Image 1 (cartoon, one colour):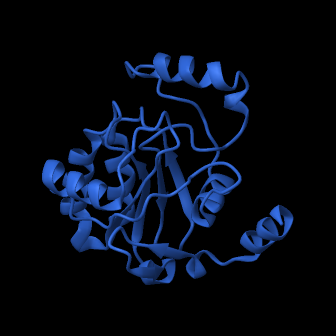
Image 2: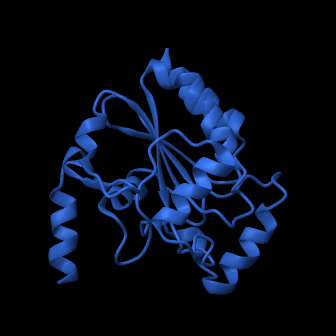
Length: 193
């Protein structure tokens, strides 16, 4: 069964990938063709949760230039997104005024990783955490305890990992949660020119 599933996603065109919005609406990546995309896995009880505010500011600044943020709540990292979809949606809107698309809770790593995340992690490798960020050491400690070899695969490591996709659908960059949002904005701005 697993081999058949893996073969299917390898043959899948990114535009054919089905996405389920947090309100249950189904759409496809095809809807976002020609847009600049920042795909991010999110959580409401994480040290990086305040990034929602910076993401919303980035979205408002560049949205009219064809920029979209696609947020995928995920509970795979120390169960930091425990609520159901309605709870997650209310949290995002109430606390951060999120207006970018938020999707149903999604697995972003492992055997049941969403096909979009399988493609993203295949196209952009894990290059480590920003050593100057105050939470980098803590992340290393947590991840090493579960998997001493965690640095040697391209799985998503934590909440608020971001993948940047250009207008042609090419995955052009990956930002770990410890990357400064200024670096993310520079990359987005470059693509919006």
